[in-house]
Image 1 (cartoon, one colour):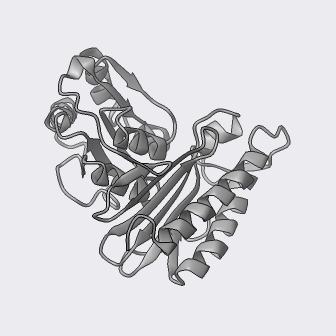
Image 2: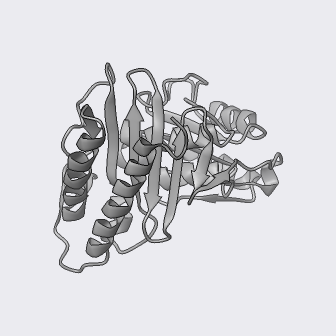
Length: 266
């Protein structure tokens, strides 16, 4: 398989069509929405786009799905598609960009293909295992920034908003004083791909799900970045914590997290 293979081209085409569908719902005042839990919002667009993705991807590779709305309990014990129809639903419902469509192909042991599409800005990110990462067909790489005060970093607070703990807030309080700026875009997929193309020097977050990180993490790694759990381990797809960084800033981010969190947090 190469970056122009039939499978990757097919998935990019499917993501484009899903983005067109999502944009038809975007900013609709009558958009139907509900809460799956106290803090977990789902919209009519999420379910519509996910159904479309599942039907289309099944024709590319007829394997199981791990997806946010319909198949959240699927294990990673065998090949599957890992899909997030709209990452950043709160943004989407409020008429705010960014939001993203995320598709990862998992071969039973690792993600080997990834596509993330930001429909509003028409940014199509893609990667194949060992083949590099691309934005709208052009190869991308992580930033080379090596000084914290010159870095723009990204984070999110899924651990706080969904689980009610203090979580990573102490990390943010420390980071914001040591970096040029910290951003919270409201879409982990966007944070990851923007790290991959060098807009952010790094991203970290806790409390995420596999569909939030599976595709974007491969794109970061194929762009030359490092992706681990907070501990430095490799189970970031299922492990609930993630650091994605350029190589120069990785140790800084990992150390800041370790120093800012109490020993019993994670």
